[in-house]
Amino acid sequence: MPDLENPFEETLLRRNRAEPCTVVIFGATGDLTHRKLIPALYNIAACGDLPPQFKVVGFARRDKTDELFRSELEAGNRKNSRQGHNDELWANFSHSIHYHRSEFEDVEGYRALARLLDQFDEERGAPANRLFYLASAPEYFKPILELIREAGLNQGAGGCWARVVCEKPFGKDLQSARTLNEVVAGTFEEADTYRIDHYLGKET
Image 1 (cartoon, rainbow, N blue to C red):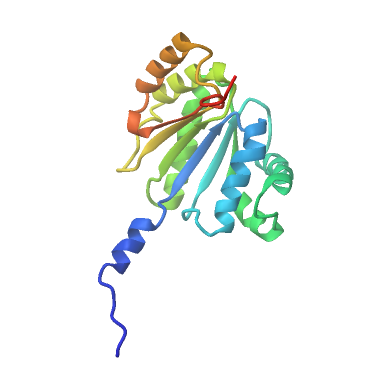
Image 2: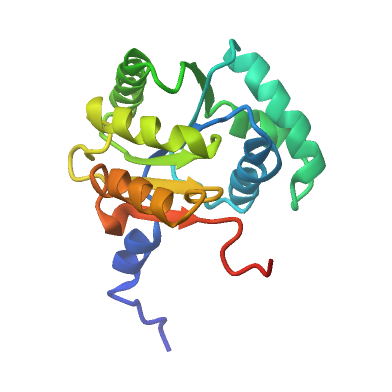
């Protein structure tokens, strides 16, 4: 009996295939990036599940080259990757990692970031989704969000989405959390906003 083709198979494959994406990590020289975020992305790469032409941009205040930044991240990945560290896989994965130096409160740094992301899209030949991951100290969340909006980075291009992840304590009390929430709501739609609070649900 001949094999029957599933007419929906290609549609399902297209639906499950990850779209090109750039992840921008604010506070990229910190512990969260080295111990958690980059090893997690590396593990996804090891499973073959990263989208094509995937990019990571580390946004932080210290002076670094791409090469130095990648080397520091490699040291963290060797210690923290659940998949174990593979030199060949890391070499391929690390080519997607770039470093962007700027103060968190300097709008010109965000405009330069916008130009860099546009450059990546030109190299791809099409716009990509953008995820902004706030891994900085919480006191910088407000200026980061405001300057993302001022630089026009909160608007997806060409039908692509732009989303934000706020990691770490979301405000220090109810009032500060509400104030921060207003800034988030003025920058991203609720459906495009993800909050990770280290203390939520933990006993005190």
